[in-house]
Length: 327
Ligand code: AVI
Image 1 (spheres, rainbow, N blue to C red):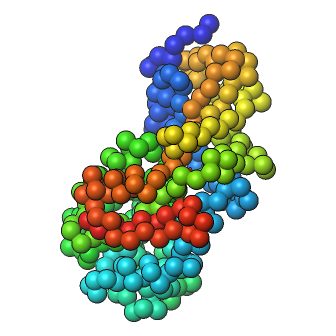
Image 2: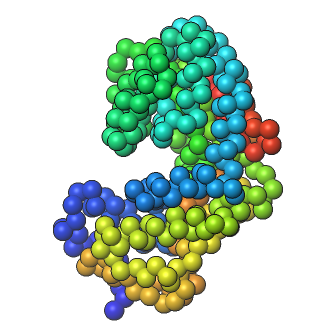
Image 3: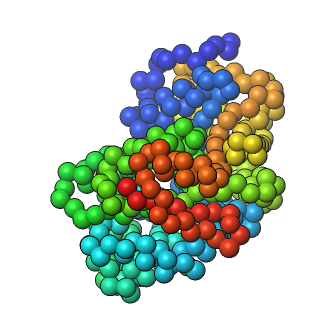
């Protein structure tokens, strides 16, 4: 029979899986059902996201790359407004394909800085500590492995330089407007007046361009979303029938919210350890939000969370902005 999911019988999960399981169940108890998009990124999801970033229809990476390669001088000058040494803290650095252009510019300009990437993946941190000094001679890298706010907390207890924090890739778009305000407020607590934040936002634009980016012709985004069901089958031993779900993406030009869903094509029961979850034909699971912003909303986000607008760098199509704010 199909019962409401109950909070019980999860003792056979490992602690890592337990959190995954609990967060999944919490989302599936909501209406509409939701799944947490942060779990997209297992090894297969990472690879699919790489493919998304390289695909024709997904413009965000190309736009921000253009800013980092064509406007490196403006970035360097903004950061070096003050000639004091600084700690360049990057939240979720990936493989630094964009920020590496900034590092080279800063070193060329004689900047005195330490690069402190923060990432939840120990592999990424190890990789950057090893590779960056080889590809960017003269860079000083000291990685921090953990959650953004706990690592910033740790840093705040050490005597440090002024901070320049970078949050690239439009990752803030994967939060609702409310969550992104809370995130900026949270960040601000770890900064002191004069510190800087460089934060990437995807801008509102022709709705068709946005929809195509999240429903690409090659079907990579579709596979990226479905991979979370596959991951649950692998790691939580569920029995989702993957072929019975279809990717659907909506964009609302009035709110700037781009949302992706998986639509269930038939009535189905999915078994979770000791619990069973029912899905109805045509029911949608909300998978992810990719919020688009106007410059006015970005200004408002700065002003209401303790930042001042310093400089905005956009790509040549005006599709993406790296906002530079001062605390
Ligand atoms: C990581 N993040 C900024 C991507 C985005 O554009 O929302 C994740 C993504 N989801 C589907 N395509 C890309």
